[in-house]
Length: 131
Image: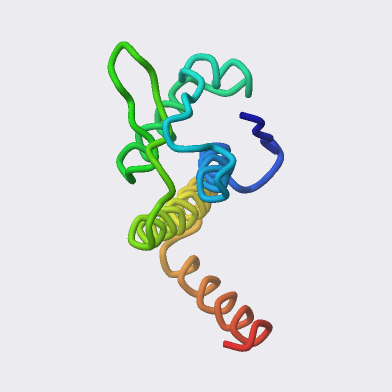
């Protein structure tokens, strides 16, 4: 499984990796029944924290994309159906917004400031993308 992360990206590493695994499964490049690397192996290969990969595997398992079988490993469960994809998309969007809010709060911005900028940026985005 070939994954690539961009440490300088504003997208959190766990979202980068999780999105790539989801895409490989959806595209059929990771087939049902195929064994995935262990959490420890993948963390070492990508040079990221063990807990980051554990979180990704937990999320993918929760969404029914992978299955961890104690003592045997982690395997691709199958290609996601529409409901699973919708749930995954919603979860990803929530994670992105949560990360942005956490960063803004850490920089000292208050809820009013954040909401004002968000509304302006959303309006700009709508104008640029046709609604």
